[in-house]
Amino acid sequence: MLRCFVCCCVIGLTSCKTLKEADAAMSAWTREHLSEEEEKKQAEEGEAADEGKAATEQRDAGAPPPEQATADPNQQEQPPPIPTTDAARGAAAEALFESGHEAMSQGDYDTACARFEESNRLDPAVGSLLNLAACEEKRGRLATAWQLFKRVMNELPAGDDRYPIAQRRASDLRPRVPRLTLELERNAPKQTTVHYGKVILGQASFHVPLPFDPGEHTLYVVAPDRDRRAYQVTLREGEQKVLSVAPGAPKSTAH
Image (cartoon, rainbow, N blue to C red):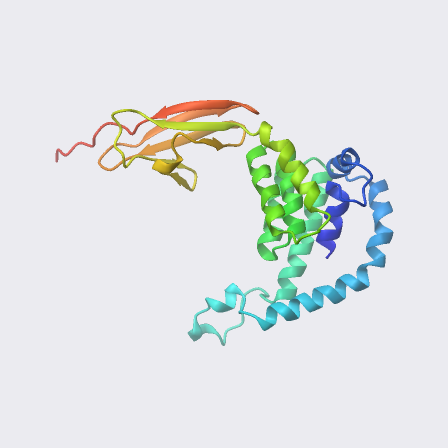
């Protein structure tokens, strides 16, 4: 509940007067704004505790947590090295979430984004995703932020007052996101794929403007029995670029 509540003041829900004021609150996270929201937080503290308990009971009634589901039966009698209960994960997620806001207030967006992401990994919540999206936008990862705002829209229930904020942010980001269209050179094998980090782009990805974060990217082009070829591409905000790619030379069969 606290994570959902804090995101209301940080990224501009109806409790904030305007989207511009919400942006200022998100980037600065001033003491004045904190003091204004503290009274509301204390008033809702009892309700938040009750709802958190109910949510924990509901999760306990369902499937076991991943740590328990994948544990080795021969080692069940040994205590885990760290707490793995819903309460422990929730407490850690809450601490990371609050620490993320502290980092945001200091302009340390790399740290803030990492903590929001880890908070959501431990205890998934729309509020964490919403703040992570805002953080990624602040540090210039526009395609990442755009995707996260769209994900928030998909996960929010009907009528949630955070939906129009996420929708507006996603709409504003869309024209700012760079797009790269990959084209396969004429003599390149049809089995050619493009590797970008953990993402592998196949035939269906060619000739489609794909969203990328602004900045420099390294793409690796791979095909059976061919050497790997690297491409460096730099994209600016809102830029549309086409890149023709092909794998390297055939691999030598000499021994």
